[in-house]
Image (tube, rainbow, N blue to C red; front, top):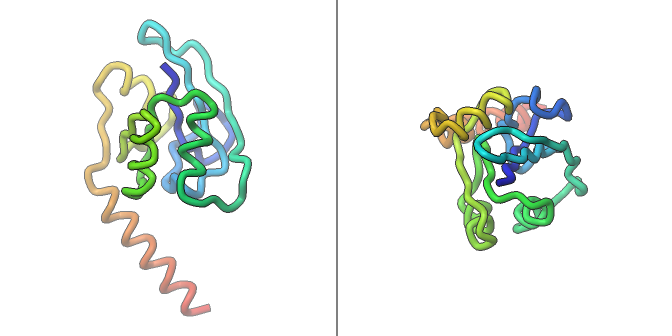
Length: 131
């Protein structure tokens, strides 16, 4: 199985899951065999701006079968599902820990991620208005 995780930086398994799926500059692709991490690679997202379906297709092209992300919109989830890719939202923390918890089926997700992202977006918009 190959898991794709949007990352805050390019530190691989030491990176944290990006809080903004659509803005992540890097994805960590983790290869799992026999419930163990067998390898990983960090791939830079090849486009600055993206349209609907671009990131799901990027993940598919790199063999991703599961995406572990913090937040993600309904459209993106739908695109992934159409490509046969499973999406888990609300994942947060160091990628190594998140992947191990997923493998062990004990991954704790933030049930309030949607509200937190809405609040952050509102705060960002208010800051932009003040500039």
